[in-house]
Length: 277
Image (tube, rainbow, N blue to C red):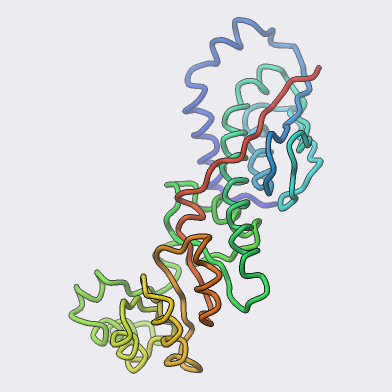
């Protein structure tokens, strides 16, 4: 997996943040030449995600460190499963352990929650997508985890698509004005508009919206919105999408369901690293 430069830089900064000027405990206890083998072990049941980034952690931490992967990203793991084996200088393994595990735990948690949402609607023609509600500077890795869990990515950043939200509408003077302003410059780009009610939906459609985001609408209104927009625009449901509600929302016929919780509220997976020799 080719990891972008800025992601490698983030990982490098994470190591700098944790190690500081030195790993004081390790340097006092472990000799420079000592080598070890450690196992990365699951302490729960989840979907594993993030091993390419873990490999990058150990690569940046010290030369000669090798990661042997036993279970690929996307695998379902159980408590006690050995995910990977890392070998190299003991100092390097100990100094980079926490950063590696933090990334793997975070991304595995995201992949697991995404998988749970996807499973709820797997027989329906709807996509579970993420949002920009990600941890600052970790977006690339977190959106990778969403894909690993079976979900799809929404736009990566503000330059990745036109999405007219409530504050844009307010600033522009209305839905129609906002859409016209966007179309005037970017006539080839698709335009998505956030709406809160059926009247706004109709205005967005009549003004040429290609995608409409239904923000915090009731299931009943979503069902009507799908009928109104059929054959005209893609419909995305958003706002307060819980695992308990996602099936009912999907059954309205919407095309996309965006879930901020995938990246802003997911619990981390429980993973440990243990030196075995």
